[in-house]
Length: 467
Image (cartoon, rainbow, N blue to C red; front, top):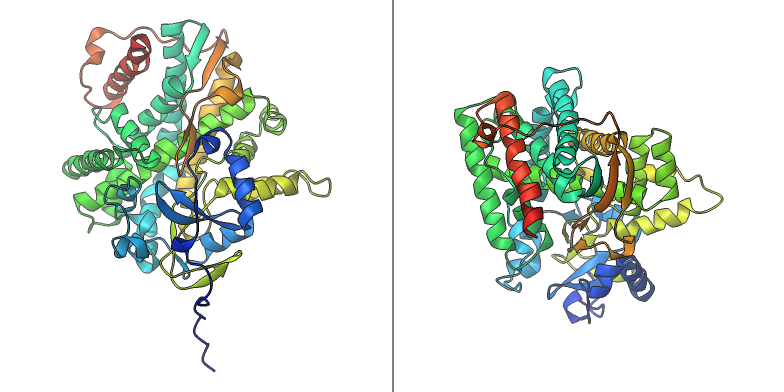
């Protein structure tokens, strides 16, 4: 017996474009997104119509419905070509979020094309995932060494007691150093590239040009590594799929850099913040030496990707209290869905550890962060957080938590700065001021690392002095 075709939406059910949508990105959302999610849920139920910079989309709020969207690949597509408003020319030509979605890479593919790209990434990442392989051991050593060098640089420039911004002077340069190492980058791929990735994700007026600059930089990197292959992710991606040309490889590197520098960076900063602001459950897990659990608990309270990238309905479907039409865009909200998990874990009938393993910080379903990348991301976060509390005997916020400035874009909610007053341990690493010749363009190996560190010195402390 043949299955009946899916039923279309009833003619009298409201269409997304006909509903009076509430703008999501408001001053209230900047200050307290959780309150906005709760109000939307109380008004509309599990799914709410919202406006993103003038474009109506569905925001999915409840954990069950978010999982349905993330896991049902046949119903909910990632390819932007399924977006009806885009296909029909209904989006503003300068809509700032579109630039990122137009980048044709693994994250926005479906079906077998997506699975083939994931296999390529898994093959290329596998050597770095294995701690016993030369590549894996070297990467783990490099992450710890880079963290130590940044703490030592802080001591050399600001003293063993003083003030620091753990975003600009630790997290962001650490991930830039890791990116340089993992991707096999020349030293001139620097801080401005990370800023362009931020501009793209925040959806500002310069998101389009920033995306173009970042893609061009990674395309140049692909060409550089094709001529000079090495033991790096760029070369291993080419080896795993020789059909990748420089442009496509540049797009894949772009996607990996977004996750490594922005999502992973937010996870580091959010974890540090939850510890410093006195989150009891997070601090207990840190005191017990359970760094992985510390990160999980933070991702539950404050996920690095608050509202995940759009999915597009393949056909009409009922979700929550509404019918979603084929081609409508929906944004699954991890931050809103986690409110359900936090409510469950606060119950006296459920252990608090139950929900920490269900957080959506790495996504879910077929498009979740690949296992090898997830393990590497977890390694970087736990190392970065662990090294801070190993080397600092004291650290406290210099602003009240409710006054910290956030990047409250449509996708990420990340700190702009994390200002602290600190005191370093007596055995914390010490870095002597580099000789002038180390500021010149580095060549290879240790010279390259020191050249990058000298460039970071100018970025971290030169900008600070200019303020």
